[in-house]
Image 1 (cartoon, one colour):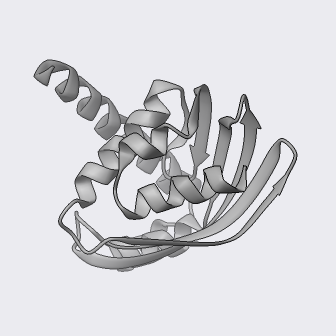
Image 2: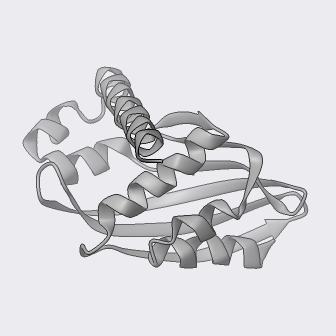
Length: 158
């Protein structure tokens, strides 16, 4: 399973969403502080949306410390990018945990400090509010809305 995790992050660094989602089980569950819980196709579409949003920009992913033990795994990864809404540089440090089924990732949970992310991405407003439950709830509402709009626009173009 270690090669599967490596494949996932190499594809992410290359902004290759097709390769990333090929690592996911059809019934995958993804969770992180910004999006909350996403299941199946929504989890996959999130990666398409994120990769498309970073094409042609200064984006980089690095990963380390991959560990696999039977049906579970973990990794540390870092993302370096410019947050599009504020044009502020972000260096996000993330811990990932995985569960595997049928040779694919069935559960993927990313954990990072939302407060640290908000301080970098939003500046003073993020410093002030980024550690609150209110901020997390509002951010997840916004990310879900953005994802649903992305999915609807993609369907219209097909």
